[in-house]
Amino acid sequence: MKILYIIFFSFLLQSCGLLKMLPKKPVLSEKERLTYEKETIVNNNEIKYSGERKADFPVIPFQMFGITYAKDIVIVTKHPKWNMHEYAKLDLPGNKHVWLMKDSEEGTLDQFLTTNQAEVVKLLPEIPLKTSIQEDMIIDVVSNGDSLKAHFEYTNALDEKVVVDFENTKPLSTLKQRNGSTMGHSKNQVAVLLDLPYRQFADSSKITYNNTFFKTKKLLGLVSFQMLLEQTQGGLSTGSFSMTSNKNAAKTLHNKTNIEQSWNLFYTEENQFKLYQKNELRSQNYFFDKKDDHFFLTKANVIPWNTETAAFEINFFPALPDFRYYFEGKHTSEFIMDINGQKNHGKGTISAYWNTEKDLIIEINPTAPWWLKERPMINKIHFEDGKVSIDCSMSSKE
Image 1 (tube, helix red, strand yellow):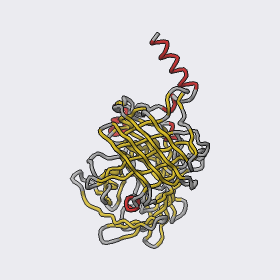
Image 2 (cartoon, rainbow, N blue to C red):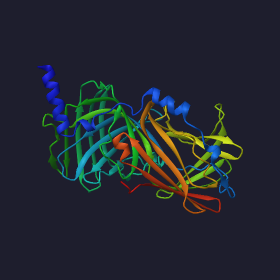
Image 3 (cartoon, rainbow, N blue to C red):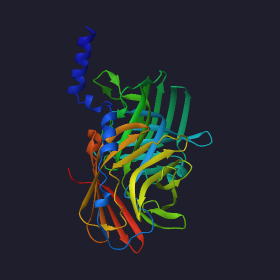
């Protein structure tokens, strides 16, 4: 009888498309990863550079992010204009924290961020979500281990007064497969992967919008779609920024927020150069091999303030060319993405070619898993009088 139930339940999952949403295993085995690391032909010596150097600093070809939520509430209601709600706790230095309200719009699946701490947003300019700062939000959370009772009140992007009540009293379950599906959320904003180590269906949830109650949806008509998770999110994000020289190495200016960041360059114990920017919440690190006057990007990562484990890391095979010099043809490398120390959660290719003498095109084409594959990006790098402008966008091609 138990076997029949499992078969029947699996059939229901497949027929409803829910099986596609469940966490999966890594996209590469350890043996396959070693093949990338040991057998990839390093062909940067074949690149023929010409012309003068266009910048005095190593160029960042993409914008990345990585963030870990200590607790993450997920609720899906029957509201016709909202696909999912996520209420995430981000731990801060000094034994502090902030709650982030993330609402996914039905249709586009774009996410809107609401928080009461503007300073946190200013420290994460690489996050491209439309953001509302509401200092008068009501946040009342009581937690003890995995038991958590939460009450939130805020105004969403549709100008609805949202009131949320949520409770979980059960211990979180450890997931054997942690490569979590993004379910299409923020597909116009980020190429993102997840690590889902713990999850539990919660006891209760209730959300009202302008005093109108919409029921919580049920999976297969049986289980309410209300969960408590712990998760890490990381990947590449849309946005535009510029790079110019400063006394340390370079500075970046994010066009949308007008936030400026200072970057340093130093030689590591691993015989690489690291271009990095660090603040109270995280460090962003780009690692380069150097030969003669050329910098080759080998990997990049984001490390949160409270751990030595990268929330997000991307490795390139072979290393990327030196983008400060013009070169003929198209250069293509493969990449592998790791999340929260979990290897091989995503992979794909990254290609670079010059469109004009001043304009470099970067095509990022993920190949697995499916939720990353559907998010190709195209970045454009423009060089003008020592200033580098980088525009990162989701690609329109299928």
